[in-house]
Amino acid sequence: MTQDDIARTINRYLELASVAEGADIAVLYADNATVEDPVGSTPHVGTAAIAAFYDSVRSPNRTIDLITLRVSGETAAFHFRVVTVVDGRTITVEPIDVMTFDDRGRITSMRAIWTTEDIVVS
Image 1 (tube, one colour):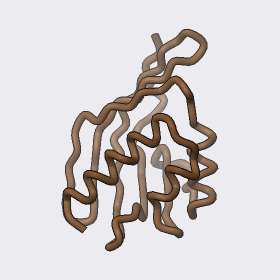
Image 2: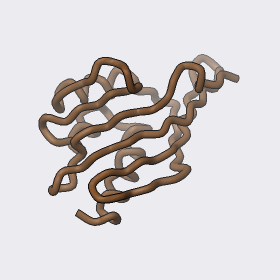
Image 3: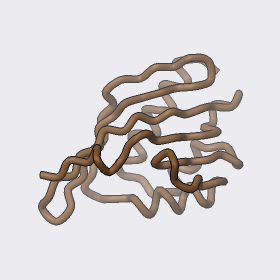
């Protein structure tokens, strides 16, 4: 598992998170992985629960752009912008996600750092 491998997985994750179904995103995760989005919420455990979570937040009118990425060992932190258009309103949030990876390059945990106060509606 190299830094480049992790960066490729994160870029694929962001690409899928903007348009894909939950099952397509969940394949990036290890079987017993966890998603805590946002931090402090009840974690989604296992790929079925993770797929259901991503399906619940899916939107056809979403773009995602990576702002910065840092990788150290088997952990990555990245800041990105999510812009979603709903009913003519633009919703923007810029979370920071922290992910860990197993030796096969699968995500073992994802923790999203953001609060409702970080959401901008215009």
